Image 1 (cartoon, rainbow, N blue to C red):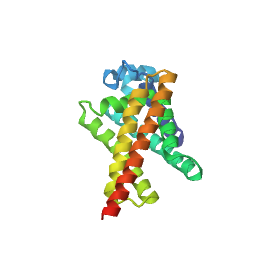
Image 2 (cartoon, rainbow, N blue to C red):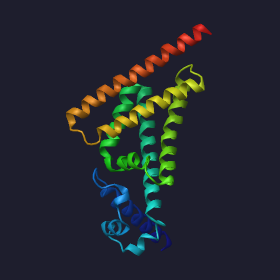
Image 3 (cartoon, rainbow, N blue to C red):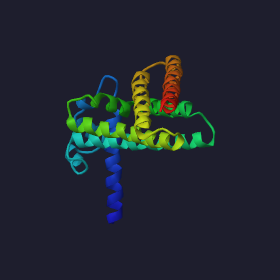
Image 4 (tube, rainbow, N blue to C red):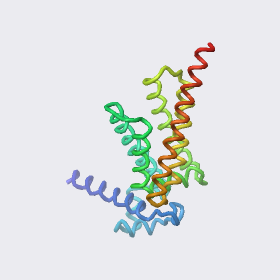
Length: 206
């Protein structure tokens, strides 16, 4: 019986999360959502909401965490595909762009709240972005002879560029989206090649 209750509780929790996500649009941000709207969409009484989240901010932070975990898992899978055969830049960009287009609402949450008024939101989103930088730094350290500072500087530039492009691609038509991805891949190539040239020169000068 206890197991059945736990399963039902988790199902309701997920229903609340999905209800919040379904109401996020380009015009309707998380700060515009009300607890009653989310509860109604989830098919529960407003008072039942508090059995799962203390308030709307906690719900929003949960959305940020789940988005970060999902995207990091996808990028790890992308790197495994790269190890077998493929371009690190092309594969990573394709994976990231697919995620942003298939999960546009949650990505909008990340973009809007990283410069929003809630310190908790800003801190949570910054942590997620830093996770990407740290994982890419580790990857670059394993795949090159860069020192940590060089690898981190490169990772930071790549992540920043990709996240900014993700914001731009959200509401573009298919043709413009493809052009943006092609331009992004080119820009990332410039950064990666430039970093390699500078690093080689520094080694030779040293």
